[in-house]
Image (cartoon, rainbow, N blue to C red; front, side, top):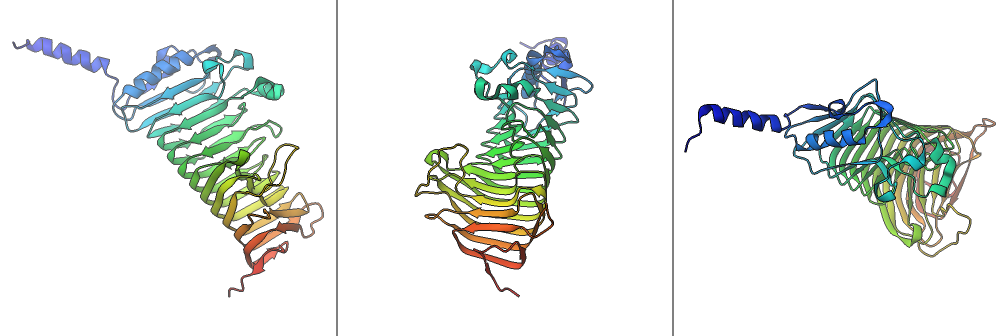
Length: 401
């Protein structure tokens, strides 16, 4: 039986209206968001995401400018229909100022804004992610777990660029179990005394580029832990904070690995460390194949540090096992150290560091302008080339032309 032509047209129109448009922008204001910084807009965000995830080609989730959107913990789940999605933040996303007011998922505040299984995600915009975390910090560890701000998990080919992050309760940006990530032109800002507020944190994540980022926090500007591999970092400004850290690795005797790391053109200002590798006694695994080049230090306490005896509590004991550290190069590292001992390479007696190379190092002690000193212990196959100041006793001249 054939349908009348008019009926077919009506059915086609109904299908079109019920299907989210290709390349369409989904504005949270159209889903009931208020944007006054007081009303909870979480439900509107989730409704908008539902339509974005159903759209077939390059949809945009829009948080418009000149407004402040209060949201509680949300999870934006995939897998979505489109191979590319844009999450554009031009306004400010903020959180409740009182930790007790957070509507945590299953009463566990592990994260605030999460993306899971969203391949081809592009997070960008001229806006700010503001965690409003001062009261979280004042309560310290009494509140238990503090939430990470932006978490991207189990997602591939993800971009994050141009956004600003500030004052988040715990880590600001976290990627874990991802492959193919590009982070560029973001800024992260939290007070120097804010606890554990790492800027960018990577775990079990591969093929990452981080470039042109300005980060100042109360902890590591960038931290790479177990499973981080093929990470390229360029044009990073760090300070205040604890520098760029590999680790910690090997806590509780775990076997953990980080490898194929390249840091180039990094500026550290007023940080506790510059480029750091930190591992626990008793751990296993390796930190290897890393190059740190064109590093500049201004009043950093340890511009170069390898520490196989890392411990963040008082009762720490030497153990026979250690995470292996191998094939690490430092090239063109210059500037001022806040401490006289500008270079610290403290390696294990039982699992010494291997294949450590330095070239063109020139660090001075900031307080007097005099040459800094260095501590170096337990290095096998350690070499230097060119001028290396301060002199590092466990490195030999490679005598290359």
